[in-house]
Image (cartoon, rainbow, N blue to C red; front, top):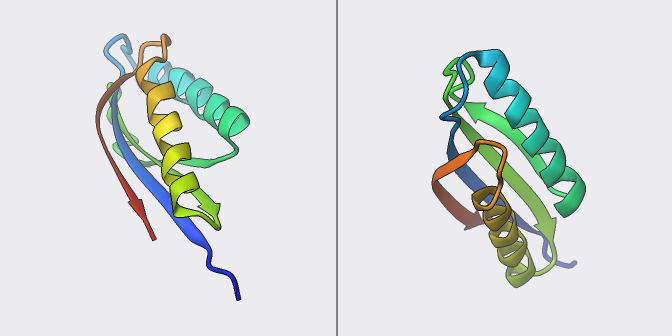
Length: 97
């Protein structure tokens, strides 16, 4: 049987331009859609749902290669860091399961 590697990345995000939950959710939904479409990963807001300027987001992928999974998650982190929609990456942690 082959091995399945699950890559998981938790990101702490800030939305300094948001003045309401509606603003935050609009920007976050745009980012989530982009990450899902471009990188074929699962993305979910997993914390700070009621904070209007912060969010905790989890990104997951499954692969037969740990190197590939880690590289893919690094590309996702780079995409978030370079995002120009008003998102600031405060911190992140990547792990392989």
